[in-house]
Length: 214
Image 1 (cartoon, rainbow, N blue to C red):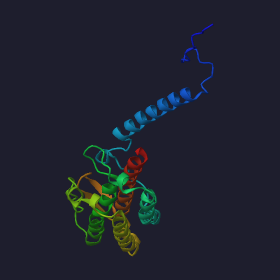
Image 2: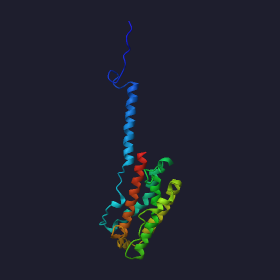
Image 3: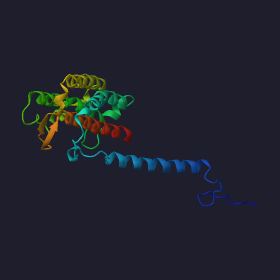
Image 4: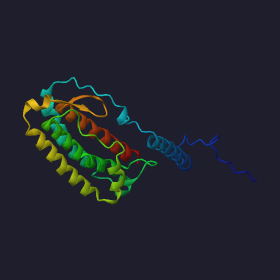
């Protein structure tokens, strides 16, 4: 007697999701869901917008050694973030925004501004050196065409120059105030160091997010 073979479907399969077909289907659903999550993370940044940040400069000037060590450690943290990343991941852009490598290059690009502002405190005056808020230098630098090793080495050298310069200053100088041109509020030298450290963290967070999204 001929019997019609039983078709195994998701409704009448008794494998309890252990057969190859069910495992393949489940894996497909998992990777599809994971890709949706990755795409959402890639499209929506969790890093706060820099120009919307508010800063509290009420801490004591005696914290300047702590801030100096934060600044000194920035190159090592950047190097650790990008150490095992491929060039493809580092130069990948999110829409028209900077890649992870361009964020790293930007940290190097603003070092002359930080140094100029340290000199402003030494010379005195009424206002700190004005920043280029369009970030033209970074947009035109073509950092994605450079070697990441070169960017890291140059940033480390520039940052050590900045920290060494600050460490040589008289402790009394850390309490001197000048007007910050964008924030329109007085900023002490110790506040400037905090501002730079927070700027470092802002771009390191961007780099981490872009790398992690991959």
